[in-house]
Image (cartoon, rainbow, N blue to C red; front, side, top):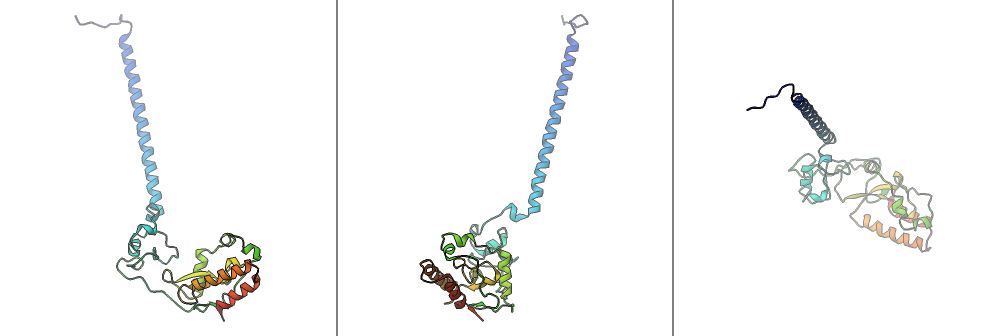
Length: 239
């Protein structure tokens, strides 16, 4: 016979209904929790994508010059730092070298114009007479002192280039140099800075050798700091 449930079975039918109601509530609660987690994940992903879009492609996939075989490849990717803000990326890499924004054109020639300072192998003494710090020979002879006091920003370098009529230049053609070097008490003032050529008998490498020799003489007590400063400023500037 098929068992028959009635009101005398201890209420088992109502118990089943109650259990079903509890199960439905749990399932609905689990579904709501899952929906909330999915919504939060979508919002978080949207935030990441928005940040990447705001920061631009260079931040999303930044690279270094060593990642590229030549300057043309770096220019096409344009996701490295443009240190001098002239639109040319990784200028130290070998050519082919396209123009900024291009892919198959030679790099722009240097843009030179008549600035307020005379451009040449030597500093213009009217613009760069050689400014000094309040420093002693003992301080300048302390290892690490010069590097700790070096403070020339990219913006200041750009100002100095423009004052000497240099709008653009090839990589390795110039450096912004201290007329009186830091180790001989020179300052980071624009009046002690000028675009120095690397090439030539009076270029940066020749000046570096003289700086080292004068620094050694000062530290050995053979000449005074003031004499060394005057020698370097006079030798590497013109009226």
